[in-house]
Amino acid sequence: MLERTPKTQTFIGAAGNKLAADSYGSGERGAILLHGGGQTRHAFAGTAQALAKSDWTAFTIDQRGHGDSDWVEGGHYSVFDFADDIAKVAGEIAKRFGSAPALIGASLGGMAGMIAEGKAAKMNLPPNFSALVLVDVTPRIDIEGASKIRSFMRGRAREGFGSIEEAADAVAEYLPHRPRPSSNEGLRKNLRLHPDGRWRWHWDPLFFDGPHPVSADRDEQEKARIEGARSLRIPALLVRGASSELVKEEHVREFLELAPHAKFVDVAGARHMVAGDKNDVFSAAILEFLADLPAAASAKK
Image (cartoon, rainbow, N blue to C red; front, side, top):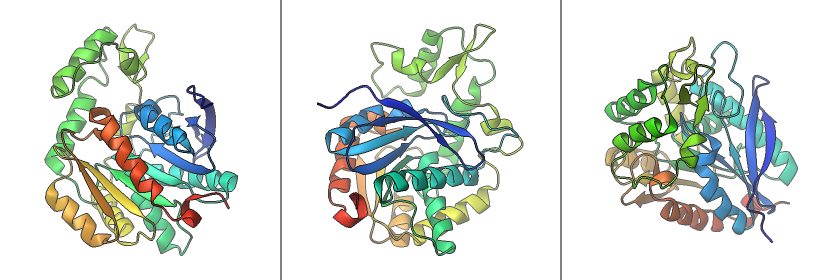
C-alpha cells in the first residue's frame, strides 16, 4: 500500500549547506522535483504523489535559502550556486539507485538543471540526470514578465504580513485567475512566523538583495542556459503555461531549435506557476513523458 505521508530527509549541497527534502514512494526509479524561486518543496507535493503511484521514488527538495533548507552564509544565491547544489544531490541519488534521476525543474529549478547539464557536457562528464523537464522556463525569458514576478515576491519581503489571511489576500490579488483555496494551510508552508509577530515568505531576503543575488551576472546566466540547452544529451520536455508571463512562443521556438529532440506541451489556462494552476494536466504530461523513457535511462540497473 502506498504511503501518502512523505519521508523527510536531508541532502548536502555544494557548499556543505543542508537541503531539506521529502521522498514519496519506493519505486526503483528516482526523480527530483525542484521548485522555483520563492517557493518550497511543497509546491510539487501533488505531482510527487502521482509519481509515487507510478513506481517512482520522487524527491521534492527545498533549494538553498528556501523553506527548511539552510540560509547560506555570505548570501551565495547565484543560479550557478543552485546548479552546483542540484548536481551534487543528483549524484547522491544516482549512487542509491544505480542510475541518474530525472529532474523536473520549475523556473529557477529548471535554470539550475540546464546550467548543471551544460557544465557536465563542457567538462566531458556524464549527464547529471536521466531526463530533464523544464517547467515554464527556457534559455531566454521575457524580461518584463520576470520583473513583474520579482516585484510581487519582493513587495512584502521585508515588511511581511500581519496574518496568513493578509498574505492570502495578496496572493489572490496577484493570481486572480486561480480559484482561492478553501484553506490557507498550503500557503502557511510558504510563510515563516518571525519573533516580531509578522509572517514573511519562507526564503532568505538575501536571495534578491544580498551580495550574490539570484539576478547577478544575468548575461552569463543566459549564455550558460543557452549552452546547457544546446548540449542536452538526455530526453527533454518543456511544459509551458499557455498564458505564461515568462515564456513566449518565440522562446519556445528557440529552445526547440537548440534542443530539436525535446518535446513540448502547452498547458491551457495556466500561467507561470503551471503546477499550481493546472496540477492534474501538468502531472499527466510529466507521467506520459517519463513513461516513454528508455529503460536503461530510467530504471535501476
